[in-house]
Image (cartoon, rainbow, N blue to C red; front, top):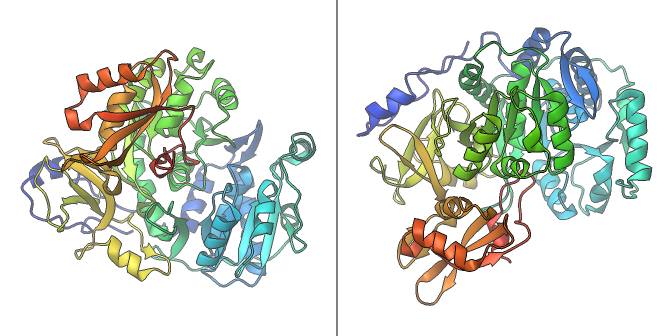
Length: 561
């Protein structure tokens, strides 16, 4: 048993008593007998025997089947002669194959490299070469992208799967529809490819590797917002600790014991660390994972909610907001929904209020990054605060100024975190690791936050996104919250643009909910709710905002419009 009670040694700070009251008296103890993710999977497969693990396009796969299939994949990977710690890339949308392959990679003693399936050939080439991946699992819909990669690096084994490959005869029909009716599989020519179904027919011998909590298990590539994308090295201990930290909070959200077989809707892509970790939490809690292959297909997502009535729904602000405004979703019975979990980006008050009014369920907001496995802070269940909450057990957070000095309570500073969920470092980038860490071992998040008198933290904004108007700091998040609260606004994004008089001014991009909304309406609303230098001087109405595949609004793309 690993006890993290001595992991954190907080600095002596004026607001220590307030901070401790909300967090550090709760300490994390790792589960007995779980020394790596292999143990984690074993324990939970045993606990969930006979239960449904996955529901995908109406097809069910049990925990027992998932256990056997992932071990078969692990044995096959070992038969390729890979060394413990070798990297295996997975380029798939949400599907049963992703979960089986992910678990097979881990159980083989290898390192998972999550790849966004919508990457261009250039982006894929960078990630494959940077990670030194020797194997690539890829869904056939995107195989043509790999074919275009010029320098395929160390990749020697390319395993291609169809969407329905783990769904029996129904999967044969689905594959045929995807290939020949919907024509969603562009032509490709990869002579050395291996068929995923064929590896499920092999009978290689499996050898359980010796792994510990400090061994790297995932290279989770960042979005490259500060330069070239780099891989955060997450360990077995990082992920297990974060699941246990989440469990401390989430399990209290059920007034009566949750039932095996209840559904957790997994709409966010599993290659994203927030969805990945919450899905492992769902497995620990014994949920059936309702996999949604395309979260932007709101018609399908609404049908899935109607049919399966999930208890647990992790999402991002833009997804919550889209469902609120989607025809049919408002008429559903949401009484079975117990926890709505918000992450990945700030949950706006207007979205939280409308969601609670419609579903009777608060959006519980947390905060984290790829480098922190990902969750650092969480709000108490049963309320929306508009803040990111308090630090997780055995997690310490400090706020520092540009010189690295801690700021007083109530003042803004860069959020820096220390805890068992913080990454080991960046793969092959010691210089970037050094830049990301303070001299006393805290990870610099690049986010600006404040802590109030009750010990709750609030994100003000990304350090790099801050707008400087005549020497005054303006945080886009604050502007977006105000503009989004106007009844005629569907969603918005704010950036700073050059101005010869004030250095920068605020510009907002708005998607209308009310077609009669005007620039004068927005300026009047801003005048009522924002001080002068924070008010947008430029307003642009657009049909949609550029977003990541998780639904996060991309301000760097707004700057190109």
